[in-house]
Length: 260
Image 1 (cartoon, one colour):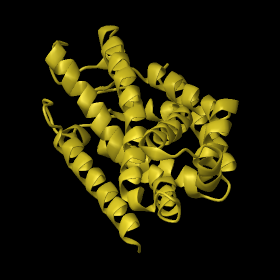
Image 2 (cartoon, one colour):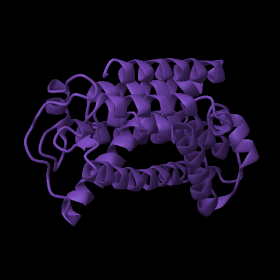
Image 3 (spheres, rainbow, N blue to C red):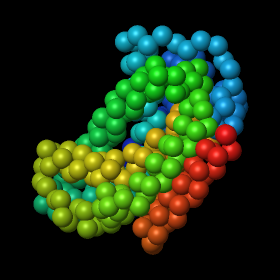
Image 4 (cartoon, rainbow, N blue to C red):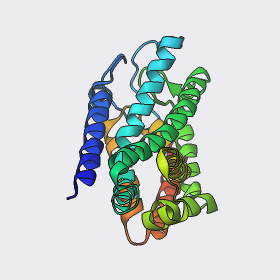
């Protein structure tokens, strides 16, 4: 393995490891993700855990960091194929001397987009908790019908033209890098953000499923991270995503009708 690729690979593994440890330990939160996972109840029926924490600036910042670090742990592995190919291409270009730096800048641009998503998720988290849709202490949807609606919505999105277009970009690293290539540090940042935007467009509805299973439920975090990675690397991603969509719709309907 070339030095540039090795350095970027080690950086990716380190970032994922540190983000994973931060998420598992629930830094700054009332409970760790391990505790949340152990106490997770059936979908839409969270365990009673007392009063929710008051939403002040400090708590909102902690929730934002929780979301962003969790997204870093979940989404960085799925960006690795494009990132490593980008670094390898730079190593064989006129910018070979800066290949490692440009690869890390590309990654930074990608993660900035997920920082934007995390800001939106924090707002949604606050709003749904204020409306009583999310149980504050357990960070999970408080009713089966609501969980069913989210599952159905995520399933329907799997069939959308936006999903198909974004998935095509995310599952074809060579085509993406050829179509959107730019030079220099600014170009690397923009390319990383561009790739992150496609990834965001592809996966945002799947990330909303964390509200169904529990925002700090490790089974859902790991499961979704593996699914997103699989969706980008399997030979027929469109069929896979639509099959998943059909299963989510069926699961959502089941949640709604079994709650009556």
